[in-house]
Image 1 (tube, one colour):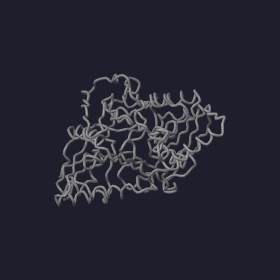
Image 2 (cartoon, one colour; image 1 turned 30 degrees about the vertical axis):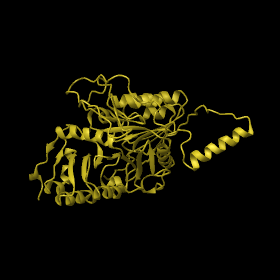
Image 3 (cartoon, rainbow, N blue to C red; image 1 turned 180 degrees about the vertical axis):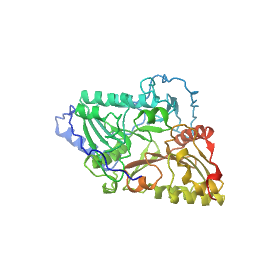
Image 4 (cartoon, rainbow, N blue to C red; image 1 turned 135 degrees about the horizontal axis):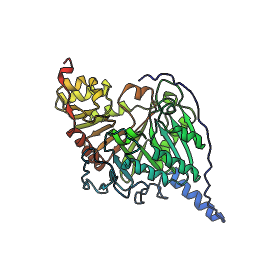
Length: 421
């Protein structure tokens, strides 16, 4: 997508000062102990401080189910049994609790009445996470018009939390119904990518240098109430370091291909689960996906956009050779790009949501999940600012497979008559 110049180019500024928390040590031995702990924790990378300890109570678990008007039948979330030791997930409103993470899926109700319809479990979970912040919130948001989330950011600022936000210069700042004017007016520090070819397309928060919220969900009424989306809140100081480093680059004015290709912790292991982090446009998500697809036995995808031949052709070729089991659901408006998969006779369907299927998900071998803000397109890889996590966890994969089954059951076949095979 080529971005047209913004009607106005501006850079929001503001400041807030969080109250510092100090630890005083009155002896030489105390200082030696602190130095040793610092060396072991951060140089040798041994988690003696239990910064990634998964047993603490996450901040975002909602306490009550959402009060959503039943325009459509509610979507059940079955219990997931343990797939391996330490991988049991507990159902919570809107998703699942895995101890060190919570995973959420939106349940579209397809309405434009923003004043009447509230109580999205995903929105409530994000608000709870922000209300739990004690020192810092850094947010990279493509767009925002959720008043509850905006109010939570304003509350955090008022109680002394340092809040900083990066947004897109057009789709964020220039959105007519957006809430960034409230953010600017409050004095919260706000930056944008101004007018450029690519998009600041991220949707992530870093809270207290410990929690990361990310996924496909824009912080908007459509994103939370009308579109199919996913989001995760993950407790990991080392993962938070990755997202903080990316945020600092953008906050300092480096976007897209100008952003440094440095990630403090490219692979983080949390409670036995390896998680790879990739940022675009300085990374190479397509190359990593091709590597995973080339060695896979099964692939399921839910995608707003899938336009890259370097992803489509390996799936089609391996499936036709009987080497790969492929099924996919694509946003209906984007189906025209799937000629090779449809003409290969593969089970690929268009979504049944009258609004948007906005997922950006691959599930590989029922054990690996690729998720984040990254659409599988040229612009996402070459121009935009995006984030992708590659999560190696069977239980999380099974949760995404359940979401895939829900989307598949309401999907429709893509008419072959639309393609010249």
